[in-house]
Length: 359
Ligand code: NAD
Image 1: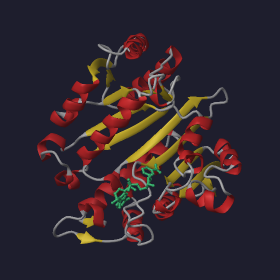
Image 2 (image 1 turned 60 degrees about the horizontal axis):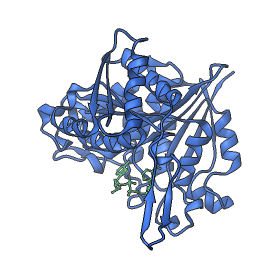
Image 3 (image 1 turned 45 degrees about the horizontal axis):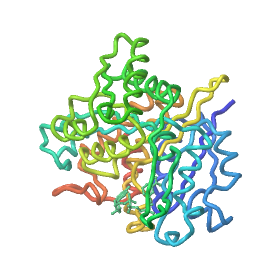
Image 4 (image 1 turned 180 degrees about the vertical axis):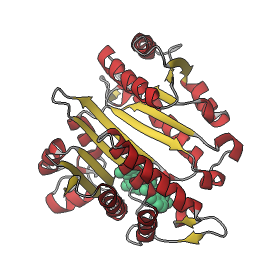
């Protein structure tokens, strides 16, 4: 049966960048996929009063892979927390069990000057952060703010990890490392937090199944420092939800542009071989430039390349797509966010055109 890709374009620049990714996918893969669409985020709230409609969830469960643009914007900021566009992201991750967030930080040769670090520190950088996405302190109980008898208030959040949660994310990291540079660095705070002491023990346990992968451990404070000191020492970093949230943002700045960063969120492989997977750019809905036709579609197109690689095992096509993007950047073609002196500035659709032409 033809595989189905569900496109959840969302808000702001989401529809603009998704449209380019779909054009590129169609050119690259012909009739290999069918495409469907559904509402999410503010667009869904406006249409049906909820950011994550039941119909969207049903389609997401059916789909072989999901491409998501972005959600949110000033129009919906005053809404009750329960129906904010961003709730849809938490909802879809939870409902599909998307526990592994993959965020590559790749520095393209042509954009090496855009990094906030010295070119020699980042030239050729290619690291992958694997963040646990459905556990840890963002979900742990007890949580909340209470008032003590003396009138002081107390805020609590709880870091919780169980062995299955740690083992499955560790496996994702080791499997990825086997296809990349063969190294995993597990990041924790095992000297202070018992939950991450367990994290370290369980990662070591899983590493025994991957004798060819070199495993190291790093405390999160050191990892943050090493990421800006010598980022090229890393291949795959695996870490908890909160540490991953922070470290992946640091790593993204090494590359210099938010408009260039893809991500994937994967669920567990089911017995029938199916694996829920959602691919999306790291950036948000960029309300300041939405509707102007100037957004950079490359992060979303690179997310589509990750989709081809991880959901459909289409390595050749994914490589070709990444090569086409490199070629276009090498030709000096830029959207406004990555513009440099002497380069040619173009808009969203023209960037899609250029990548199609380079394929
Ligand atoms: P943002 O990523 O939307 O924008 C930050 C800055 O980067 C803006 O100046 C924007 O113009 C620029 N930018 C982002 N993507 C770009 C692209 N592809 N091309 C060119 N420039 C780009 O972050 P924000 O402004 O903090 O958030 C805006 C809205 O997006 C908020 O409602 C926020 O909640 C939401 N958001 C959604 C997601 C998501 O859907 N996954 C992620 C982050 C933020």
